[in-house]
Length: 229
Image 1 (tube, rainbow, N blue to C red):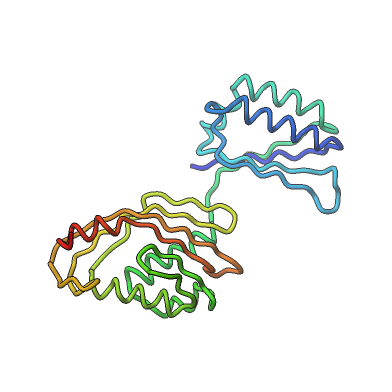
Image 2: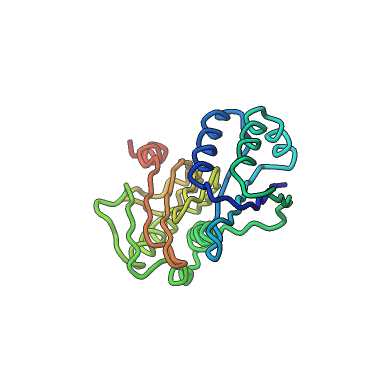
């Protein structure tokens, strides 16, 4: 279970504290078990800060706390704080990455289920699509609709999300696609073959909609599997 520790403290020496944290990150490289860290400042009190530190589990957090680098960093941090920091330990029981949920509707509802009405809900009106399979970018919802309908007419397929990462406005998905060639695709008559390919898609989200997308996949490998090469 994901574990998050909240460190609540006050300091008038934030620049020095930032330098300390940078040194800690460098010195503990390859040892620390932290997966994500956020530092927030109180809008109403510029000396009041909260650090949110995420670990894969409570056990990983405990292992991290026992590192000599962590102990040294904490002692130096104490010297830079105005008073004793407070600690809140949380087991994460629900974690919603809204951009990730938005993007996954593309794979699940639009691509695999064929619900084209979802396109209006998740893609911006001026969505721009960069696809290595297209000679030029497509702009607008009609472009993504055309591509999905083309793939669905040529294959019965599914996506397996092998890895996914959300950072800022971007969601990157490493996927494996498996499809049975049931209809004409790129001028190739249906072969009945089951083909697979891997690829990566990066979506940029803005104001709760998918604004831009980049598709990279093994198109040549797919052509070979269909007997076109």
